[in-house]
Each structure stands twice: as C-alpha cells, then as structure tokens.
Length: 482
Image 1 (cartoon, rainbow, N blue to C red):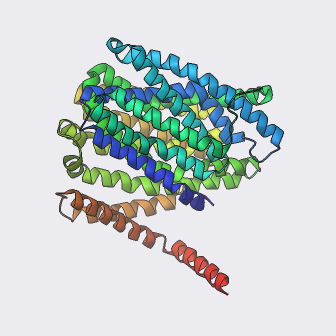
Image 2: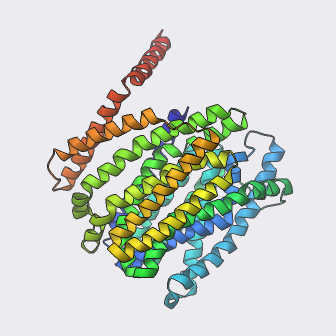
Image 3: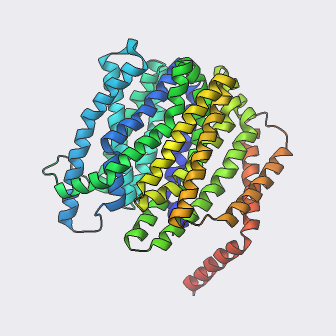
C-alpha cells in the first residue's frame, strides 16, 4: 500500500522540488547576496507564521478529519475551518510587520508589509489545504496545491525580476500570486466553506487538545530547522548569509526532495491503521518508510557530494560559486540527518501522542545545533558552521531512534540499511571512475549514470523481492487476458 501511494504522490514530490531547485539556481543570476539573504529569511519566517496561524488545525485535520462521516459533521468541520482560515489573515499581517522590522527596518513601508502578508497568508492556506487533501487521499488536489505555486511563481518571478525590480520583494509577490491561484483552483476539489456560518466548539476543543501541544512541538522543530539561517545572519550579516544561502538551500532542498518522495504517503496510512487499532501494522508502515527514506537519501547525499564542484561551476552565478562548492555536500548531509528522524521516529511519537519524546529530541537538536553552529562559524567559518549543524542533527537522530526503539518497540530495518549502504557504495565507486563533467550534457549524463548504477545495485540487493513483484504482475496480466 505504501509503495503504491508513494508512486501516486510522485508528480507532486518531483515537480515541486524540481522547480524550487531550478529557481534557486536561476535567482543567483538576478539577486545580489543581500537580497538573496533577505528573501530566504522571509520565506523561512513564513513557516513560523503558518505554525501559529494554522498548523495546529492542519495536523488535527490530517489525523482526524471526518471526510468519511456524515454530511452534518463534515459541514461543521468546514465552517469551523473557514473561521480559522479567516483568522489566519490578520495573523499574517502582524507577522509581516514583525518580519520587516526585524530583517531590515530601513525598508519598512506599507507596500513591503502588504506583499509579505499576502505571501504569508496564501502560503499558509496553501499548506493547510495540502494537508487536508492528504487527509482525504485527494492526490490530484494535493498535486495541484504543491506544484502550481512553485511552477507559476517561477514564471511570474522571472517576469517581475526582469521588468520590475531585481529584489527579494518582487519574488515574494510572485510566489504570493501563484499560491493564491493554486488555492482558488484546488479549494473546490477538496470542499470548503467560503464564509463561516458557525463554529463547532467540539471540533475546536479537539483541535486545540491535539494540535495545541503539537504546535509547541512544531515550533521547536522550526527553530531546529531554521536556527542556522538566523545565527549566521545575525553574526555575519545578510550579505554573508546570502552567499551561504544558495549552497545551504540547495543542499537541504535536494535532501528534502529525496525525503518527500517517500514521506508524503506514510503518515496518513499509519494514522489510519492506528485509528483502526492496528498498531503493529502502523509501526511496520513506518519501518518500511524508514527503509525507503534511507534508500533515497543515501545515494542523493553521496551523489551531491561527488558532483558538487562541476555542478556549481556549470549552474551557479559567479559570486556564489566558491561558497556553494564548499558547503553544498555538507548541507545535504546535515539535512538528511535531520529528515531521517523527522519523518520516521518523530512520526511515531506524534502518532502515539508521546509528544514529550519529540520535545526532548527537538530541544537536544536546538541546543546542540546552535552551540556547535556558533562554535564552528567562529572557529572555522562557513564550513565549520555547517558541520556544527550536522553534528547537532546527528545527536538528535540518535536520541530519537533510541527513544523509538527502547520505549515504543520500533524495529529499525537494519538489513535494508545494509543493502542500501552497499548499493550506495557501488554507485560511488562507479562515479569515481568516470571523468569530471565539463558541460551541462556531461553533468546530466553523470547523474543518469549514477542513478543507473544505484538502480542496478538495488535490484541485485533485492532480487528476491523484485522477482516476486514481477511474478505477481505477470500473473495478474495472465488472469486479465484469460
């Protein structure tokens, strides 16, 4: 079930991060480092605004939305949801005011505030509706919500940067418009109440009871994910962070791309199984997800590290190249270590309502990452800062896995990890034997060669399972043609 659902989510998980990666590369040719730094900090701060405004209700919807129950209960949910979505708009405006004041007081203007507020509101609603689409298993709507913003925003962004102004503000406006369009298209597909006529207090209490503690947890997670941006920006300045933002952002987006390829489908399936009283099956789904996650992220991180130098020289604008080459691979590794526990063991804590365990993991990661990032930055510069963050995420992953295994009986897929490690090693050895890419075509061929090597190695490692899948498919075709 998990693999089938994962394949159905693939268009959203491929196209959205692909355009995010493309846009990060393209924006290096338009934005100076200071504008790049401001743009990245604004997009990071939006995530915090969403946490306060909607995340607590989004996670409740993903876990408990009554999409298969009676019409009255569904109507009560939609009207309550509409009230909360409306409330998120003034919260976005307040967050925009705070953002402009914190990032750059000299540019405090109502135009800037309104553009950022528009971006915050549309992005927050887009994220909430995406979670609701997942809860309803409406993969078409989820795909639209995930891809329209990045793709249309990229096109509008190019136009505004070219014919209006080459600033982060122009990009924020472009993506706000694209997200607004995505919400308009997808909302009818999942069903919404435009204006709230009533608020169901039982639903509101349930959302607060379940989502409230998770809001605190997600807040800690946001600090764990984004502290690097603010630490470096505060110590080294916006321009210095802007130079680092490209390598840092690309590395994390590549790792996120690998993680979300398999993570989107796992939680709804596990939640449904747990709701049905099938705890063992729910844990098995998450163990399968862990194997798939490592199977995607391990070759991704190793591949990025091995091609980072030629890829940077061929794709990134000159002012950002040296810094990007220095930290790209390390950034991908740091992100992969964090996503490993976020999408596996931390998910168990949420499903089992053991939020204190997840809080412990986040606090360990925040303290360790901030201390080690500052120490690394002051002692060894940007490379030291990224290594510090990676060490903090490593410590958090170890603590998270320990709690999941010892306290909640999670079984780590050790054999799968060994097979993935061997396949990744085979890929790395193969890539080390070929010449360094000197052109875009050569870079693409190198990537395809690495993917082919890894695919062959994985098929050999899982030859028994592959034969079983092939046999079942052939049997079904024979029965269908009979």
